[in-house]
Every structure is written in C-alpha cells, then in structure tokens.
Image (cartoon, rainbow, N blue to C red):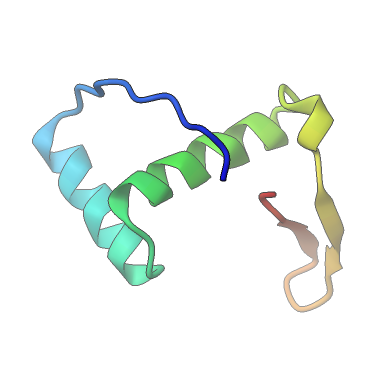
Length: 69
C-alpha cells in the first residue's frame, strides 16, 4: 500500500458539511472525497502530468471521463 502524508486542513464548517454530504452520496469517506477532488483538479489542470489518464469520450454526456489511478 502506498504511504500517504498526513496534514491538518482548516476548513469552514459549512464547506465541511457539504463535502461530507457529497462524500456520502458517492459512497466515499470525507478524506477520500477530498483526495479525489484534489487529484481531479490536478489532472484537469494538467499539473499531474505523469498520471493523466482521461478515458475516451463518454458517449452519453459527450465529455471525457476522469479515471483516478
């Protein structure tokens, strides 16, 4: 298993509440949801070049699907 770095995140309560709800809706932990959102942002901005992995265009929505390794 890959090692992960721990850090403290200060976030306003309303944002945290929304993230917790979003995470629950997608069957992720809150930490997993935050990590997913950060990775997605890095990939979409092409700042995480070694891990860019966008699948073929999703025909139902006409946009690329993001696959987080």
